[in-house]
Image (tube, rainbow, N blue to C red):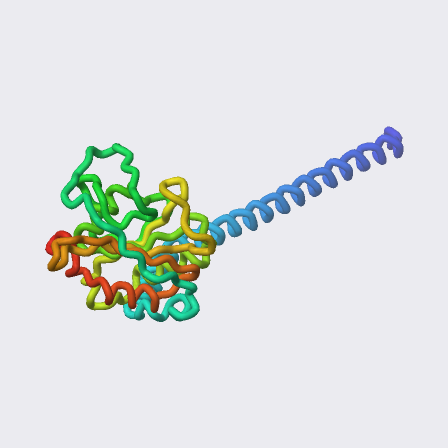
Length: 249
């Protein structure tokens, strides 16, 4: 009988054991990788669901907020009229009725912001009440709205966001009956006209129709702070029916 070689047997056994250990290690690494992949997939799915729900929820939340704001009086927003640091109303000699200029022509108005004057033939949409710097039409379009009895709240384009948010809420709130819902809030760049008085951040403007003496005036009132109450008083003093063309819009 041939003699057994113990050294060779041990070597084969050792190699087999090492091979098995490597296989077990590889299988363990594969299991860990698979588990990691599953966790990553679950996280991606959860994040996708959260983002999707947020995308769906945001418009719904805004809709609910806007609905609530619509039922609030504009006097609920901003400071009281007596705390708004408003100047007395100025009465500007008005002109430019039905003076339609070509789109793109730059019109230099005698007062800033304008309360009357030549304007473009097309007015800003009647159903939009608030504009930001990104979507505001030219000033010349908005002056046309003044001709139809609108009150415009011009605000400095540099106002802090929290103040602009209050103005947006005012624009979406329940306006006084005298306004006939003819109101627009829009930003105004100081480079678009003469400088405003120091410390004044917004201005109300309205273009009145001719009086018994056939004279017309534009009206402006500068304020330092946002005040729905001050705006209400201005709109009741100059209602939408007091206009060059009150039946438009």
